Image (cartoon, rainbow, N blue to C red):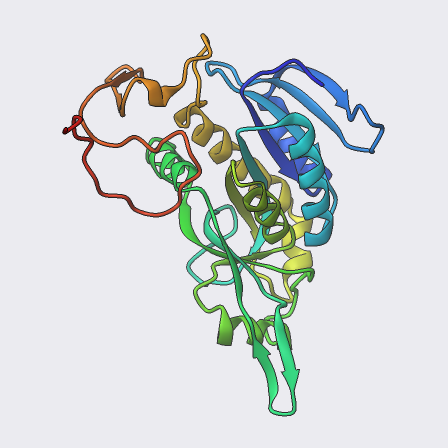
Length: 292
């Protein structure tokens, strides 16, 4: 078992996505699963933070992503999981080079085929609100990045025809989805079944999911989109702090966090602090003293 550090697992599907994240990691070392199960990561520090980043290239597809994410989570015990990569845009106003931060991810292939047609049985996986909030804060300070916080469609298909049956299926049943990719649903399924993880999917737009996909890819759009997604992922982690500081203490032991002008944290007040957990819904409350 590797030495314990506050760790974020950063997952990619393609070599070019891996290459976009890798330069952000300092003092890298390669780790191999101790049971020789096949999992292999590079781990190193994210400068200026307490985070160690473990970077893995999984290959394509949701089934593959779910299985390997589960394996690596059980091995490294990360506090958070990010999938970082490229995707096709499903909206005319979301262009090549933009970044879509998933607010939820749809598994698009669930349903029932009947004599009256295909009846959709949607499956949607929420992301961590703590990470989503950190990403929203991070992109406000980033020049040259257009970020969209929208749902993402995820299925084992490369969409290169805007008039295809699958494209029509998306417009009719997942019309709020801003991008389509192939691994986010599997990754979020694994993270949520674990029950203790923050998880987020970030995708740089490399094409418009139409017949011009290959032309866009030939211009280097995938590399540029991956670099944009990686930069947003790193900026997000600079905002999102580990559950315990360098001394191992828990944030929740000291009360709710406030961010000072210099980026440091202070604590106080009388409200409930759920920042250390993977809670995804709104909570309104006030912590009161003991009453006999």
